[in-house]
Image (cartoon, rainbow, N blue to C red; front, side, top):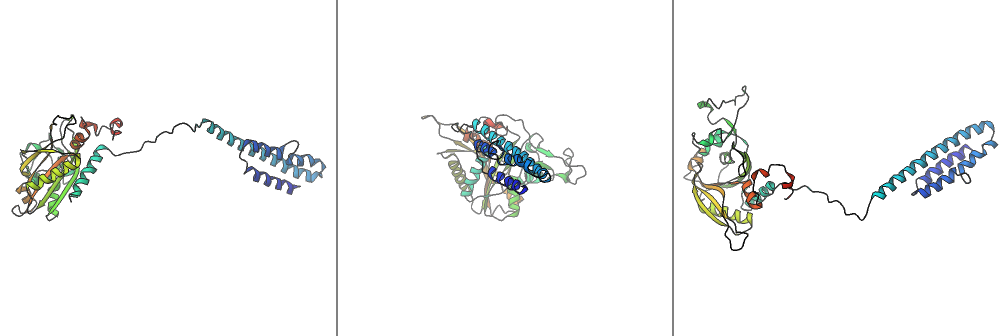
Length: 351
């Protein structure tokens, strides 16, 4: 009889694994525990016909199996009810919710596009440190010692730990400290010197990076901003090469026919220096656009070549600087530079 109970248990759980609905679950319960047809019920009713010792053993096994079957049926029923509740809340005709996808920041989009265009013109992309020395940021770039850009108003000077050899009190201005003071670079131009110190011409490089200036912020000025530094050096580089590179870049970047204007300007590290203005076609038919100042450029100053140990009688070159945010503001018609780093998703999600 105990073997019959064991076989009944095995038969029940095999059948339970194949149950797929509450209806078939109830049928299975009746097959084993039903009053009329239940297999286990019949065994329990026959206990009175067994000897006393066997009756106690089989009875304990049968009652334990009945409890096990009741718990298993209740668990399966709860599982079906849970699935039924989920299905009742599910409307298969309801439109799905669109999952938001991450996307690139407008400054990243512009930077990638600028790099792509200059790579097409065979420029190599290099990067430099954001913490610079006065030598690379000013001295080697032919910036005079009394130039206002060295003032604290324009430059973030860094003061190291007093126990460090790099500690220099800005107020002392000792001769031994000149050129070694640390600062956050005010432009990406220091890479001109750093690259020329380690490479022989001819070459052409593009230097993307962040620059820092200590100034009040407004709609067109930020304390940190993106910049692209360009440098080409060779034996016969001229202003004509500079104009070709600049015009090729802007025509590709804006994907429009661009009108250019070049104005004389002063930058310590180039001679002659120029400002480059562009005029984009007006969106209104018959109306002329307005001139927009886009970059500073010029032929590399002989003193800069000498500071990099190049012979200015042998090598010529040009350099230019473009503002990343300036490009993005013109391309996407963004009125305020502060929006780029505001973290406002209403602005970011438009791109």
